[in-house]
Length: 283
Image (cartoon, rainbow, N blue to C red):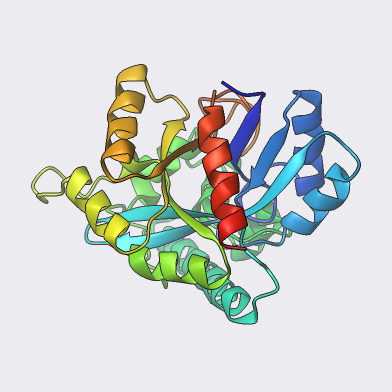
């Protein structure tokens, strides 16, 4: 195993609590040697992280997390080593972020119709400079006392089958991989066991990963959050089956918000070396 690393972390450029510079500061305090900034549909946090990490022992990798659409559920695609100077890439990310704004406005309208006195302006304030998302709508609901926790907001109102849910512009998983590739990035399937289209959907993770692998998938997130050892081993076996790089990270949004803290997970050194080799070969 390697020194402390984290390949999945969010800043206020999307729905994290810390700015990217503060995220780097926490990573340094916790002794990390490598941190990937993987905000939702945005690379805006990358420059600040690179500036703060300059002349330190911390290596920062530019990344992205893109929400994609499949029947009945979402699939999240991580991208590493993306080049944010690619204009077409950034324009598509802007379109994705703009769709989040419209969705948040429509969700607030639905919640208003359900008797909740919320405003989009407050949701926007809670998002700060980052991309507005459902977590910010949930925060506003908690703030006004309509639910006790953000989890309650999602379970009761904001999940796919909830009364305030609104669809937004999304890519398919293959389209997201193509977008990541267009920016020189490495596509990786995020937290694969969270793909949950329902009991009667006929969804099979191995078949799905095979399809993505055939379309250019490079890695799969095997070490994640609160995954128990048996889940990690099952995902690593799928990675071996399709010659994918097993990656991992905490999905850090803020301390105490998720199961794992920044840098908590042990990622094999071999995985990091394979990622570095891929980066060199595809530079």
